[in-house]
Length: 546
Image 1: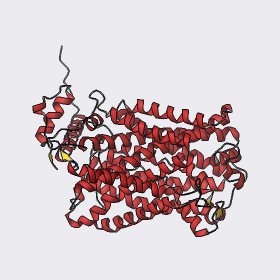
Image 2: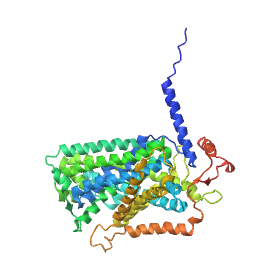
Image 3: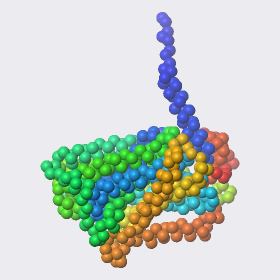
Image 4: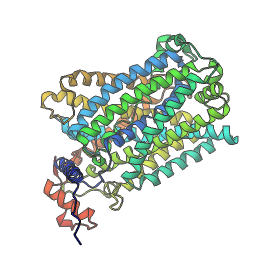
């Protein structure tokens, strides 16, 4: 009997070798930046972009701001053109951040970039950028959880006749956070699954909304109505001011795309994939969002009634019901809630990775030891290779912000807006420092070439404008307890708190990101930890300067 020859699929073998070589190169790049490869690197560029796209959440996030802001401040024309304008400005900011992601693909992202790009006082730049980023990301988790709660309660009212009360909203809010924290504790596979699901779910849901609203209703508004009609349902009489406030629809929706950077240590070939993911997520959201906005505005049947949300407690829900019927409209409201459910996962993943990265560099004393809290926060579960403590800390932060909603809606709105300003400011600081660094900046594999400076200054200018926009009064009379814009004083309080901590204590011990060892030491540390062995104290890699 003759033995059958063994056939080797050289194509598969070559592909496997290439994948292993790419994975080794990714780990080596991270070690060169001073960190070991402890998190599991399993995200593709598609799934990395999917997480950012899920956080922007065109269907759920924009539908929330369209009804609560857009239909009050400016109406169809301001919402449509404002969305496109803000989308292009955010694209400039995302592209500038993509350059930095390519050069420094670490979970810390923004605060690490600031430390590396600052010519002087790098620790101070890293300190403030890090705190702005953490504060902003906590708000992202809180805002997305509130968005889910808003549409979930609206669906519950439509389906089962729920009486929507602050207590019910609080229960739903807490439940979604705990469920997502449990799921997020299982590691990168869950994050990758939700990232891919987000792209498909938001894409399919967007298509269903667009086609249904453009085809099913017997009556449509004209193109002129959608593109040129200005509506002012606010308490202000200045059209120009109302139009500026209408930009909040896009400004408050286009956030969270820094997730691509925070997940770079879990992404394959992050020097290209994470940078492209950021840009692609923003571009896709801009285009899809504009089409959804057009479809929503064209399907309006009764502007005054729908803007008030008289039937479903949601302006967009009322548009769905009036244009498509109660059953179809109810299903679309459920679809928006599920889109925001996935969004919470992306926000929590991004926030926890930032907390993990900041903690591993935070509060290191001169002898290389860390304070107990920062050591705990930067702990990686070796089975799931997930920063579980950071996940639950991020969940707790969002729960605390959510508690404000039970006490005062004004306090909750102020907290969320302050945190959004923090996020925008954290985006702009490293971009500004990169522009100041000039030609000394060492580009990564993905960059903007000669357009880098122009795009960068556009990005910084947009953030300066957006920070002012978030602080403007939105209701008259301004000087009452319920109407006063507390955002600016609250933001100054955050800056003052971080500055006071820095001046009194942190400047004496915080020096920003530190290398945890040489590449050789870090490779050995990875082998010991991932193999389930704790290295002896005298064998641990000692921190060195970046």
